[in-house]
Amino acid sequence: MLRTCLCAASLLLLTLSGCATTATNPADPWESVNRKVYAVNDSLDRYALRPVAQGYKTVVPLPLRTNVSNFFGNIEDVWTGLNNLLQGKPREGASDFGRVAINSTIGILGLFDVATDIGLEKHEEDLGQTLGVWGMGPGPYVMLPLLGPSTVRDAGGSVPRYLLDPSSEISRIPLRNSVTALKLVNARAQLIGADSALDEAALDRYGYLRDFYLKSRQSQIFDGHPPREKDDYYE
Amino acid sequence: MKLFKTAFALLFSLNACFALAQEAPDVLAKRVMTEVIEIVKSDKAIQAGDQKRIAELVDAKVLPYFDFKHMTALAMGREWRSATPEQRDAVTAEFKTLLVRSYSNALSQYKNQVIDFKPLRMKPEDTDVIVRTEVRQAGAKPVAIDYQMDKREGAWKVYDVMVAGVSLVTNYRETFSQEIKSGGIDALVKSLKEKNGEAVKK
Image 1 (cartoon, rainbow over the protein chains, first blue to last red):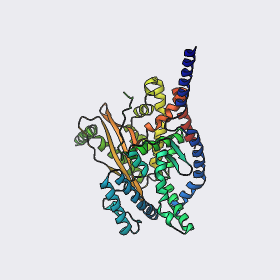
Image 2: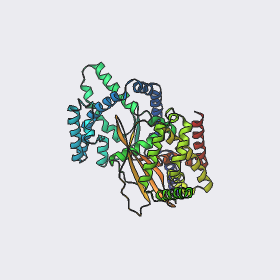
Image 3: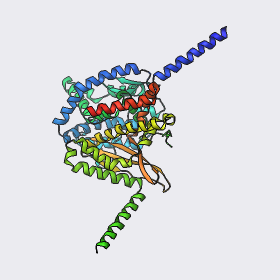
Image 4: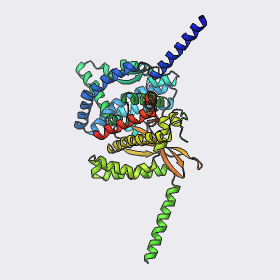
């Protein structure tokens, strides 16, 4: 009697866990909440952020927008350099700090990216990637309100970055807000084009964006050369 | 004299054919892309966003070098094996429409980007290579766009495109397998058809 019971229970458990795995993507256990956040983000983007970014792109000429990108990029290079050191890549790290030194001086406070022209390539590293290099998995996928796709690891990694952002040192609040807004709008403006490509290509935008985010982070952790799994069933 | 000319022309075109057959995959990719971008740059209708014109260009110049069946197999993964030949053809047809439209859309947004071709390390006996390019644009970080090509029946064709290290083809696999799980391959065909129909209406 006990045995049948146990059998039935384990069978039930098996079916239940089977259901759980087929219903959700293992990388995205919080999918139902994430989808709701995504829907809100998407509306905010469609009706507010994207139109503003589009306007910014129309009004501000490209050379000036390039200056803006370079300026924020120069600050970012400090973090990239630090993370390259943390990842055990002193050569890349030194090159990143060299970029900051050159661009902050000859490049007039980072407005011009002189360093790229003389052959110091720009890298992009962050704490999330460093944790990944150190062997930490991404954890569950999270759709952050306003900020978009992330994972528990990447979101955690971005906390020190936000706390130590130099713009938080600006004491005049209106100026600080303007700087943050400019950074946001400029970053969004660079994605115009990629967003319509997503609309055009994806059967399910949420899913396509998630899978792209997760794989591109994996690729970044391996500096563009992730291990390739052989999964081609074409004969 | 006329005969001489014709013979010469014939010889030339034969020579051209021969050269094409021998063309290395990176040389082929570079030739096709350079040619297409030259046309996009100089064609007024394309600059103005004439979708039909872009579609014609892609059809004539780009599609012969893409292997859509292989792409579909890659996107479907394991499910490709269990699909019947009819189902495979149906998915391929719809997926091709989707990819071509996405590609044409990307091409119509081409402005002043510069494409750098990275040197290809390849052994003469290789039949599967990745041609690496980097697209540079003022004010933005360069984007790596890589083309995976293989040689079948003497012809090199692209079967995967990777942007920033992510395969745009296998990126469909999750969505595809969700569709197949919920309603089989026919459900996948239906969704692709709907997506393509929706885009036509726009």
